[in-house]
Length: 176
Image 1 (cartoon, rainbow, N blue to C red):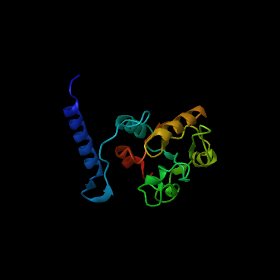
Image 2 (image 1 turned 180 degrees about the horizontal axis):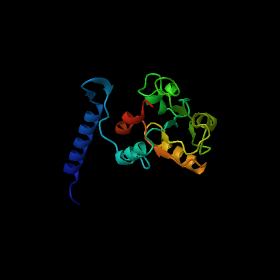
Image 3 (image 1 turned 135 degrees about the vertical axis):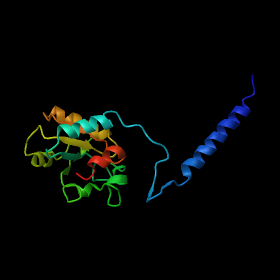
Image 4 (image 1 turned 90 degrees about the vertical axis):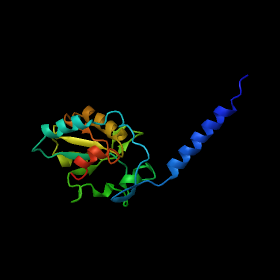
């Protein structure tokens, strides 16, 4: 049998180098928050930049509602604390405040496969199911589930904006 030691050594060297790169702090020039080591592809269902621009153009002059599908109970969804906690870049508590006046928090319940507190959304839209709605969570997975749920409930003008992890879209709607 051929000797595999040289190949194993090179794989081990690659693994060591990967660990060193991942462990190294990477900082933005004008922001003290850590930067992600690698760009990640958008999750399925998250709007492309072009789709999002078309949605905004089609709804120009209308009040756009932002549905935050993250869970404020971080014991249920621990990853929501990264962006949505008090120290995060997009605190869930900002929904409905001057920081995010058109945002409403209706957490997506994975076990029920449904949005909780849909009454808050109905109050924000005045019961109008054609109101433009942007769903989001941290990166778009539950945002997509929230979009699908809203469509199943008769809402007709819904797009998944991903969330703070999808920076290109978040910059366009994160303060709505």
